[in-house]
Amino acid sequence: MQQALKPTHPSRRFSQVLAYTPYLLAGVAFGVIAIRSEISSWYRIQEMFRFGSFHMYGVIGSAVLTGMVSLWLIRRLGLKDKQGRALRVEEREPGWRRYIYGGTIFGLGWGLVGACPGPIYALIGSGFLSVAVLLLGALLGTFTYGLLQKRLPH
Image (cartoon, rainbow, N blue to C red; front, side, top):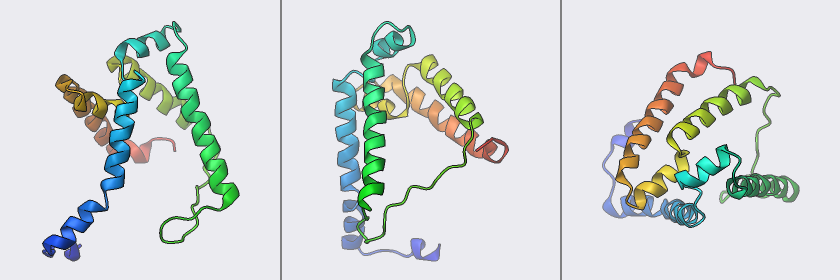
């Protein structure tokens, strides 16, 4: 903890900030994709909840398929991180309550405000500054989860 309080040389701080550049670029790419594919559109989300269009189901299904294939490749090929450590995905205990409760709360929030956490940043970046209220609500929800975490099923 004390090391974090020590002053660092400006060039070291710059290299520390530069280390986050790939994450920033990935976030910008996600934001552009979210806006261009209309997954951040309240109208598209409303269509999905009314079963009026396949658009959002196709996008979500593609994301689930991509995640499944990625995890399979990580396990199958034994991929490693930059430090040479094997990438490992921890197995979760089987259970359905956390998915039902968490999915219901997440879905209700998503249906209520018309945005999930990722597109909130894309919408703010697109100039919809009123969405900052949603961001504050999401942060409040995260804070509340932190307070109740030990009492919830995981």
